[in-house]
Image 1 (tube, rainbow, N blue to C red):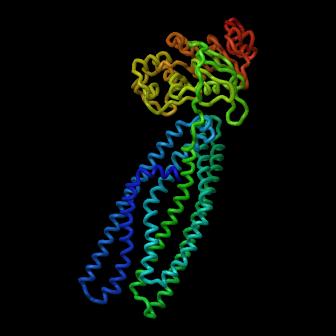
Image 2: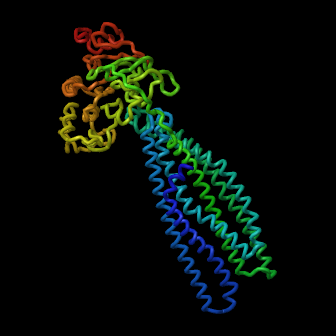
Image 3: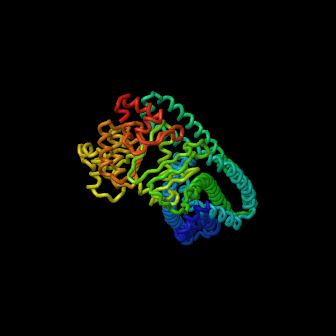
Length: 573
């Protein structure tokens, strides 16, 4: 909540004006029953039409002022709430983009999505309601009590006797309500996760006829969320009937006591009518306080979840280190790594690449191929060992300076819902000539020119309106476009035929000399001409050398090569 106050602080002036206007409108509402009582008890008995019209005009004026000021104040409150939420959402999005992969893994993507959407909405509701009802309801409550004290002190005591019980109801329910809303938001996180999994894997689900299974899984998660929402809603909803019971009990007592006092001549009828009006105002004010209490319970739970993200400190901090001139472009020195507190994914990995050399990485699924790339780009820090680029440790290079060195095609890369040109350019100031050259090198130019609109042709999100091979070539063009210092291709040619794959490797070898390349692939043909090939098994290096060396020294590599290329001279070349 403290962080939320820092977002509200720049709008303190506008909020002060809005609250002043709201105060004036609320006072006008409070004056109406008092004017009515004065007319009934003091003006009507005089039979002076002019005074009746004058006081009636005062009531009309107060009503108009109440409506106008409340509308103005509500519009200003909505504007402040909108701006605060916009800035909060923007900062939250920026923070999420700057989180390390480890932090994202810990928080989970569905939870971050829910915090950016549902939680910011709940916070917006709280900020707006606090400005609209947070001023009006307390003023109506306190002002109503003070005015009724001047009208009829005895009846006011009956009202005041009810208020402590109402306070106990609000405090008691709030202690149970806020934790329940936190659990509800956690259920929303889980629901979002299941939806994301189903949308991303819809083709697999359909192909394996698992639609019914996924529907049942969603139904379980949905029912659990409904159960949590119901429990939270029932707990919070108990405040309304409890407050109504207490306030209506007080109203009944007031009517009974008031009737005896009027019959005894101790109270005027106008005062009783005004008192009943004020009691209704106080009742509505209490209901408003209850509504604020519900919205604040949800909003404060959401604000804590947002603050949990915003208060995260950078866990991949820069570490000062002296560069070492080894002549290597990339160097892994006894690197080990484990995700979280789990088992090591990489164990004692060492290799070095000279500028312009190519490294091929091969291994079974889960052997740590992509993990090596993540460590090189410093998505994570190794648990042991060190990684250097041009003699500098990667943890001493600023992220912007480090990441600009790479051109990357990830194993499951993203095509955005935009034009082909923007997908390749990706916000970088690259000329059209450079984009066409990159597309040609990636063997993508022919299919791009064949599409209606060419580079202006629109692609759907995830590239569902192009084939898998076309998507991979487009992603390779994106990686090549800025002529990177280090080119990383993580299983980037799995959807390409052998002929296209060969032309791609020839284009990279001829047009990107001096670029250090790391290729992760399952095809021996994609890696056989690499300067170095790293063979991994369960996170350990079981072979490192050229194709010919591994054919002689690494049984696992030789077995794969023979199975893919046959046992003749092709496998040994």
